Image (cartoon, rainbow, N blue to C red; front, side, top):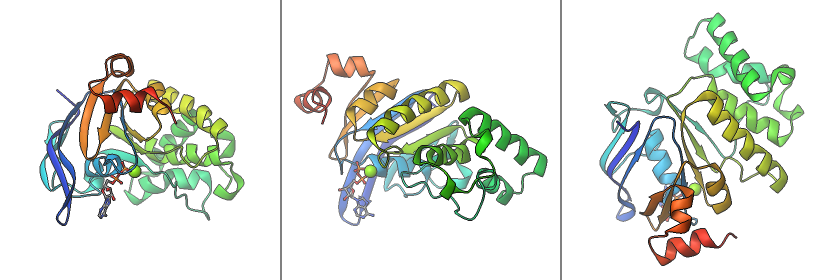
Length: 238
Ligand code: ADP
Ligand code: MG
């Protein structure tokens, strides 16, 4: 059974339909990348999965549960945003544990989850620093750590690397891939960057104008594009 299932999912803003009834099955532990040009509906699709946007029609399921009417905090998924908003006055340790504290987890659980996330992400030496004392890459890692401590069923990423310089971007790609192998979780990752998509994905979902044009492994899509749009989009990096 698919872990995340979209059936005929539509998004309208007023009279304007921006996602036109898409279907997608994402398996447990799969790393799926939604890729396509700016404005094609990637973020909207991710935000509907996260519960940050209402869907206009169709069904979204996570695990066995239809989540159409569930608020984000009840969906057991974690979203890592592009502009990682860390609390500036809190230490890394406090930033990592804050969400769990709010959810009234016992202190021992918070401490253990923070320790585990710090170990996975190599943040052990940085726990007492504040965000201002971190590099861009380190801050991004703390943002991921805040997602990891929740032990979510799935991680959602919306262009998490687009604010970083080229060198750091390549480095973080490797880290995200390692993270996926280490934590064994489902990932839905949005990017407009073809190279990023090809590097990270188990399967890529190519979108255009609110439609899914093709779904397949990077090699399937690269070697057998279904139409000229996919061929030109995947074939010619920016
Ligand atoms: P992407 O992430 O692929 O760049 P988006 O999902 O952000 O694309 O946007 C898809 C389309 O929906 C775009 O045409 C965008 O202008 C439109 N859109 C996004 N958010 C809103 C909104 N809150 N109100 C109206 N239109 C929106
Ligand atoms: Mg977007």
